[in-house]
Image (cartoon, rainbow, N blue to C red):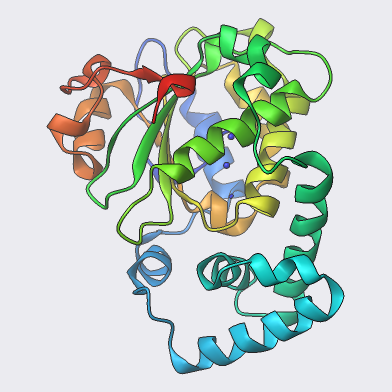
Length: 283
């Protein structure tokens, strides 16, 4: 919106009329971004089964004991959630415990009822910018976000909307799946849609409070103007999140999406079979 702004990962930077065209800038950006082939590390993150290994189980037990001493509310945190925080901090119990305690305090103050109601984010919903439909080949629910439909709103409504949307996505996860996939469509994106404050807030919420939830982000139809925004928000993206971002050129759009999403699960607007459902209407 883990980490939940837009990004880098695989090097699908092909030329197209509405896509970034300056190869010199793209090459320089790629070099700066320290792009690494995401294969091996993503396999490590995604390939672990529901059963943790013995070392991880021991660390989870230590982490639980640590946080329960400081916040009794942590007793309600299940092992899978706690494990995501542990993995987000590369198995460092101290850092993961600090991260989880920060999350609990944020949850208490920002989401006191335990959820965000649609009535609390009516202005954001009215922009009709986020949809959900289908799952990818790994069973991860798919959301589509239209960047050109985003306009800044007052106060914390965008943050509340992000929590509303992320909780909707998480509620659609089944069969042990813990991650989701995002298609960020920037067709028509312009200066009026630039909202650095919102992008940084989205990154913070995704990475700090929904760790290890992001599976992959496909950034499509990215215009040249977006590179200015990208340079500003890039330092706020953590290394694990960077590896999950894929820029896709227009010519490779359909074929690239089909590598991860079956045609019968792909939205119609990208050559698939499913109609998009507004995030607020998705069950």
